[in-house]
Image (cartoon, rainbow, N blue to C red; front, side, top):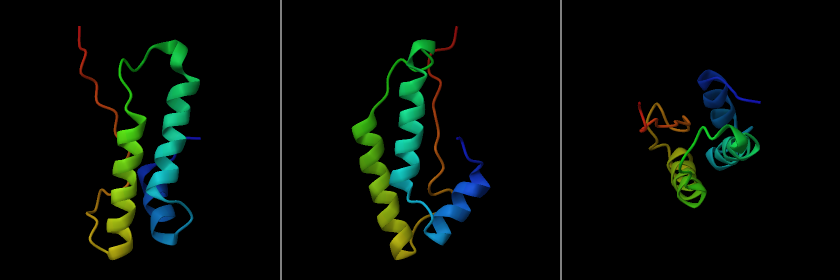
Length: 78
């Protein structure tokens, strides 16, 4: 289930979810929809590593206001 940014933010603040767990959910959704060919390139190792960095910043209170937001970049435009 995809969450709104407001829900993600609330879950991160309350500890109900981590950036790593949310990123893993989105990576799993990408994998489930692989037959749609919506993504030419996916970098799960980099995504999880970055999510862990964000989790550390959240724990220290140094994360920015958009911390935890999951973004897909469309770079093939016809």
